[in-house]
Amino acid sequence: MQTGAGFFGSSIGKKIVMAVTGIMLVGFVVAHMVGNLQLYLPAHDGEPALDAYGHFLRTFLHGGGIWIARASLLAAVGLHIWAAAGLTRMNLAARPIGYREQQYQASTFGSRFMRWSGGILFIFIIYHLLHLTLGTVHPVFEHGKVFHNVVAGFQVPWVSAFYIIAMLCLASHLHHGIWSMLQTLGLSHPRYNGLRQGLATVVTAVVVLGNVSFPIAVLTGFVR
Ligand code: HEM
Image 1 (cartoon, rainbow, N blue to C red):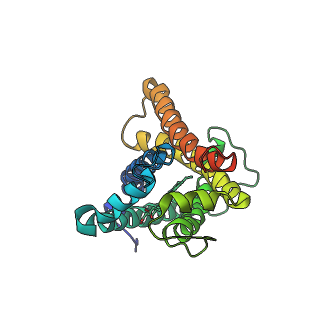
Image 2 (image 1 turned 60 degrees about the vertical axis):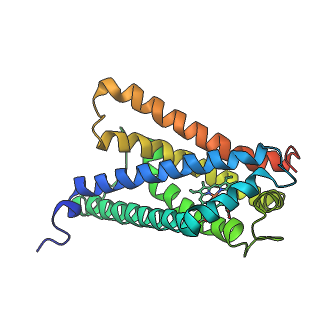
């Protein structure tokens, strides 16, 4: 008997789940990076722009907005991992013995690194929540003082280094993810390969350069 039959049990069903949840997650990382650019804005009436932004997020829709966003993100991450695990199992089942000697021809480093970069990002997200949302692994966390928490957090060199390494994994994951997502959504004609490549590169560069700039700005004393 076939388990997990039906549309979501099929390889195309799982690829569509990966693509749709991938779009949600790309939308989140773009919006999150743009929101965090407020680290560079001047304070208003003594309140850093980032603190006002954090306050807005926490009180939006009487405090319900952030929980809707959290629930959607959690569902997207859960489904994304579920579909990835299902596709991996299908690939393994299709070739139970494995190759004696792997010779990669058409695949890129980013595509072979997807499971590793995804796993490292998962660990990063857990650490990041404990660091800047809950403050449990932060040396001097103050609830609601987002600017202070980010600056004091990145003043610890190994923490900044970990963020930068995680962002390199994000670069690899995002680039290959956007490329594959556009293929699943139908942009797979050779005529569109340049466009897919360009879109994946621009979105990845904007998100990752923006994110990497934050720890660097703090470590160099540009933001203090
Ligand atoms: C250097 C880059 C980043 C900085 C400076 C940063 C900063 C922050 C800050 C300050 C918060 C807490 C906001 C608050 O309490 O008001 C936060 C929350 C969060 N960040 Fe980041 N972030 C970065 C990268 C990322 C990345 C790459 C991801 C995902 C892959 C991510 C996912 C999240 C999530 C899920 C939350 C929790 C939102 C919530 O439930 O309240 N962040 N981030």
